[in-house]
Image (tube, rainbow, N blue to C red; front, top):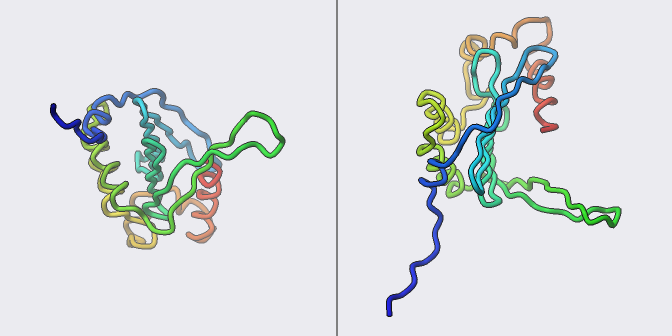
Length: 174
């Protein structure tokens, strides 16, 4: 009698099964943000892009794990936790508990899923992978690169930090 194979996740298949579910625009004070949602069984990928098609945040969730990148924090990992309602109702709240340090195994698995996603154009797929792999943030970019890519950050008299805080307030709620 043969030994059963150990259970393992097939990240290639997960990536191949991703389909784009929706693409919406979110109006903010400064611009429209494009929000895209890709889904397959046990996987959700969200991508937020500015009007110049720059990714400003991306998040993938698979089997309860979360891998997220954004311009301010870089890569963060964590997990989805269900908390029971405080009012005694049967409803639960899903919250994300982020790790103190990014988990490289979860990040590698997220990259593997994205590598095999066929519905995302190659240039966007490469950028998603680059963001998870290299974790660029505004504090590691030159001001020349920031203003070249994120032109809306220089439209008023606010300091760069004030503008970033305004943008980030919106995404902190998501």
